[in-house]
Image (tube, rainbow, N blue to C red; front, side):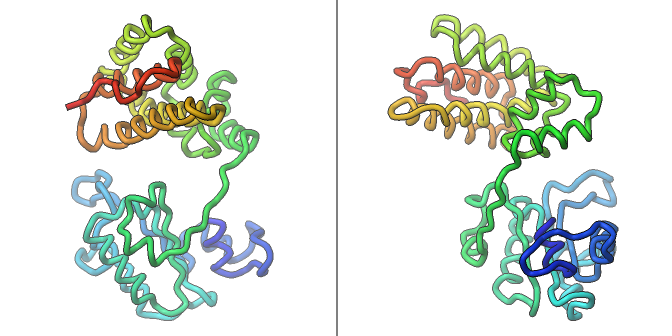
Length: 296
């Protein structure tokens, strides 16, 4: 957002600060800047539900109710030197939309800057990645994350807020997604698993998996899917040598399983149990993480 705002005019070459009362800032905030366009998942006007991804009709005219990106390119930038297109997120492009976006990158309109947000760049089409320059934004510090969460959730208990900050990993958005999942309780469960003797690990993992398997526990289960890889990653940062190699193997397996659980409609109790087993693997350096239970 800050980069798009800077490219849309109103700031000097060596600063990104822009007064909220500046005309450019006001137009962008209102979504009415003529040279700025956000491409994101839209609501299906017929079902009133969010679409599963960014579709082709958002790039080329196919639906009379949607102004496609192609129509924006029929004119030159009106208010600034550059036109800015933000795709948030490029990970959400379906195959047809990804190919249409690729065509924009292969034959870019003059004075047009595309900002493609990606949380998993490795999953993008290689031809898209090869035509983009990577700009990495550093995560926020814990005090900044806590300030955002405290402002948006002023009634949240201090212990829960601290747990959200600890699991947000520098991203207030990630913390907010976990806000209603009793993260403090989940963190306590994971801490117990990570320290449990091997003889107790299976029973604790099974108890946690059962608590996350009901339909009522779906929000907590979905939070758990994001929490476990982050928990293992945090543990990895304090390790070295063989223990680091083992925890990285645990993280890779947890990350792959968590990423596919919802997309493949895997059984929540089985997924939760295997993830819990991987966390328990942090307690036993000699344990082979690949011995964890497979999910068919």
